[in-house]
Amino acid sequence: MSDGLQRTLPSSAGGTSAAERWLLRAVMGALPGAGFEAVLWDGTRAGEPGGLRVHVRDRAALWRLARNPELHFGDLYSEGRIEVEGDLVAFLERAYRALEAGRRARGSPLLRFWRDVAPRARSIEAARENIHQHYDLGNDFYALWLDRDAMQYTCAYFPEPGMTLEQAQRAKMHHVCRKLRLQPGQQVFEAGCGWGGFALFMAREYGVRVRAWNISHEQVKYATERARALGLADRVEYVEDDYRNIRGACDAFVSVGMLEHVGPENYPALGAVIDRTLAPNGFGLIHSIGRNRPGLMNAWIERRIFPGAQPPALSQMMAIFEPYDFSVLDVENLRLHYAETLRHWRARFQAAADEVRASRGEAFVRAWDLYLAGSIAAFTTGSLQLFQVVFARGENNDLPASRRHLYD
Image (cartoon, rainbow, N blue to C red):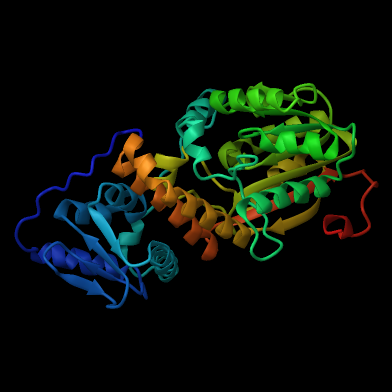
């Protein structure tokens, strides 16, 4: 992690004070029906006995947790100062539900302090640093646990039971291409292309030409080399630049997994980019993690994993479309598909944990396993959604009569 967290445990010799016991009860009281038990360093307990327990190893950890668990739990867990006994995903699911119930009930004064911090800036200059912190960790690291075919770091699609991650990612890419009604010879613009696998897929499978923009130097370098190796460099071009600088004309505009980093304040700018580039009869698709109502990303994930991230509500996404008279044609929610994608990623990450630990340390492994487990829990509890929004210009009448083309 960026600030080099070390797994060193402060001393907590002796028992707990009356204030610390009260604080433990107050924290658990803010999480009604939590369904787990909290245990302090001297064995003091609160909550509901059962198969799930969270162990707080030192008094400083307890006080940090009480100030803001959403912000500090992740660091404390990464350092080994908090341990979870039992299934981590199940624990996080219960914690998320209990926190939401506590906020609805507004029964605890602690909730006034448990607020997510505002995300970091998302200007062109800041966006480069935000992306560098997450995506430039090393291509070899991501190759350990993403799909082996296209290195897709976005939600896969599992229309059939028992699909492998590779099969589900191919199914996702086909699903998006059918929604865009891609035809050979068309020009596609892709905003935020990751390691370039989707651009290569569109060129190879649908015969289109693709220009793809990305501000991660490592990803663009990897994608360019892969296009050259596959003999697709004449049909796929990767541009190391910000989406706000996209110029030219296209028949289809697609963005898969970028909007989470854009920020609502920049949605009109993204809409302006699409408006100046998309052909009159073109189609667009935005695929993004989202929320049922406006809110901020979990503070720890925004600070340690995804700087600047803020998944939007559908109402916020309309700021992309409404000013430019784009018609929303289709909205699909793939929330549970993302939970399944994350289960695959986490299983592969855990299988490679020893290799990651050897190069990056125990705290890094614990942090990323928590991030993946917490993301599963966020999608299974409905804290996060996954939206695919298809749109076209308001005067475009060249529209399909049904959704049959998506599934034939």
